[in-house]
Length: 428
Image (tube, rainbow, N blue to C red; front, side):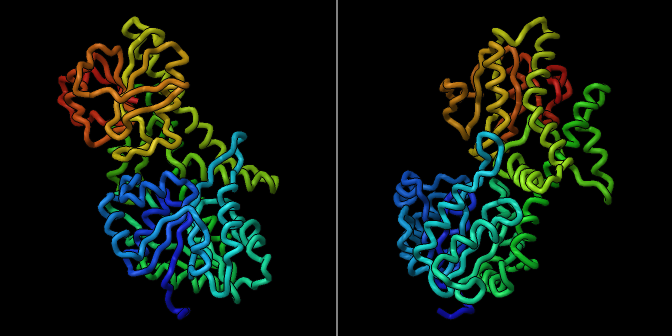
């Protein structure tokens, strides 16, 4: 193979990051093998069906028809692959510690097929040192030398589901290799799909970049969540405060309060850094405080719901409550770590009769109960309280408020409704 280019690339893990990445490589004339241990995902893709919001099924069908895009749950294809990108999950375990099992499984699957000149890039978010301390030793078993016989680097994924402005092509790619040669080879790979590459001194630095990005968001969201609670106590509209503050053209960036954090990145990634620092007898105080505030928001929302109902001489127990939107962010179908799940669970435990409506989620299981999405265009006056948790663009919020008896809005989704309807709305 010509070291100035790559012809065959494999992507391990075909989730929200891996599948778009694999198709992007394919769009730039590379032969791509997508590998995932979930046979259901593989069968869906082979039938031309996408399970990712940002990837239309038609794109998958066209890629398969080119005979340059293949999907499988077998790893033997790696024997002829030039570069491998690892995009597997990195969740927290039951005791809230990093779970690297998916990374370890992926690397152990690569090792038998490791060959001269192969490039391996880890994209899964993890703590600083993982690429060097966990991945590298598993790849040295054959006696090949890193930076000479094969290449290893870390490049943090920067994929934002549902973002219509930024995608893989127009988002700069940070790359840090185990050696300078590793960084150079990784640069050559990603130059196929990303115009701007940002090389850093090593893999640890690249790993830390991702954690800084998401910790920055987690801390600032925690700040504005606490501001929302303070404003509520003071009788001030936090949304008006933010809208006014963001008119300052320097020194301020708007963040917005909400019912809690969701998705994989912000609730999970900072914990990886906090855990790593604890092993070094260092307490990441900002991360711990931000986590405490953000994780308390679902319970705060339920308390707000209780107060709202109490003012109407009702209690949560026995009340009919409709949750509007259950995904972790607007206009996608992803419910990972969604605060709506915690809120529904808390309401059920308090004796509420809970319903939900979400055009992206047909069915939901909470507390071992199967819930079906309620049609929002039906009668809403039967509910004692309608609570907006996820502000999907498809909702007609004026219609919701008109039909509902009482609305709690945790996203400021009702900001543009007529003034005559606002007396029915309670803000976070």
